[in-house]
Length: 114
Length: 139
Image 1 (cartoon, rainbow over the protein chains, first blue to last red):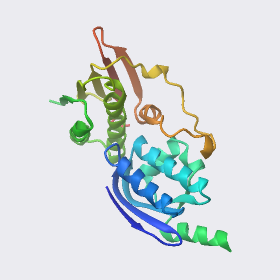
Image 2 (tube, one colour):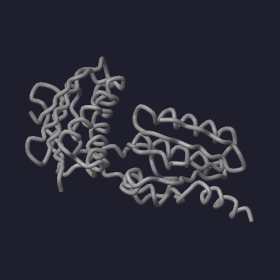
Image 3 (tube, chains in turn cyan, brown):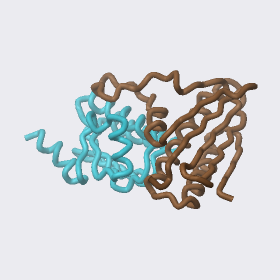
């Protein structure tokens, strides 16, 4: 798994590979650091994520809680069918906002400011 | 022979080998990508539970993964010598709760049940656990 974080008004974390029990801790720490650096308007680009297990779900939920408690939000973009299935089966699609691509996810934050 | 078996010490370092065995069995069985992901996910969740909870007290012991696709459905046997744990005793997770009320974790076994067609548990007569997961490869 690789993570590439681009800070900004809306911070984008591009993630690729598998988010599993071996890699989820790294993801949780990277996203947790972004939130603690006050990058609480956060988008994860999941278009290159091919697999997630419950370890990945833990990282997503922890980040979501951190960001919202600090007045921001954590949103996903480009989730692929295999990962979407796991999110749906776990009831995560009702608490996480999902967008087709990064542009739409970033724009959703901008729209809220207007 | 349409059977693959691997025994390793139950540590996270050995998880990739267990997952690779699951992938290899599915590939040899001609499973679709979706089925392969499902089997991999089930094997990961069960193995990590054994690694992090089963052997939490004391030294890690063995975990054996045995996949058999001689007939459909495929059977996936996972055995350990860890403390007894019957997954049937777990409460169902709350999937409708608001984000504030969701606990972080507790979804692993829920996902296992979603990924396979049947889960059978029996405690080993001496010590440890024996799980059988059943998965239709060609639905």
